[in-house]
Image (tube, rainbow, N blue to C red; front, side, top):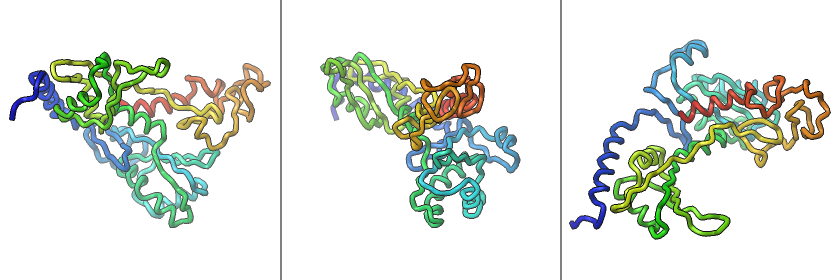
Length: 301
């Protein structure tokens, strides 16, 4: 079979680089369930029984929380259902918001996966047919961004189909290749956005760059927002105002039910509605903010 025209040497070098990267990859253990991930940054270690402090020392897992919605239970009732039907699960905490949404923290990957797969049908048999369990929306957005790369300075004359073909030539699996458009002038730009099937494919392109025949272009990962998502209505985390369940305005200054511009509390009487600390609820120094930020950082790195 005749070789493809132009740039075959460049593609061969890229393929060799990819092969070497593939050998190095696979060091991150990932449990994938329904498209979500529980991640470990070191080889798996089986956590032995003991206190929560002991578990933190023995395991390097950074596992996201799970959000449970659509149930009419209190914390004790949910705790007892899990205790009765899923006896061997390891859970460090169950939290219940004022809007009736549960946040569940699993200690290990097995508990995370079983909660995600088994808790909803169990709740349905206990009169909670509308129960839905999922990872926080902010975490899902972060995981999606890990699959995205941008390639700049791609000549306008190069169609997306040529880029898709170049990716296939080096066995990179892309879901979508699209040229970005200047929304103001409504004209195409020299920036190509590529969405891959997984972060490994994206990371490979970032390392090797994009080779289109004899032309080479640098690739960049999508920048991730590592700041916690905070609702400006209720001032709680992991959702935006559009998805706020309470729709009850909370004052960032005193924590009462009014807008901050209507607050008459003294400036030295600040009270955070989340941590109860002496600061604004939107402060980056808030203990709740730092806890959320740390959780996101642990999931990214």
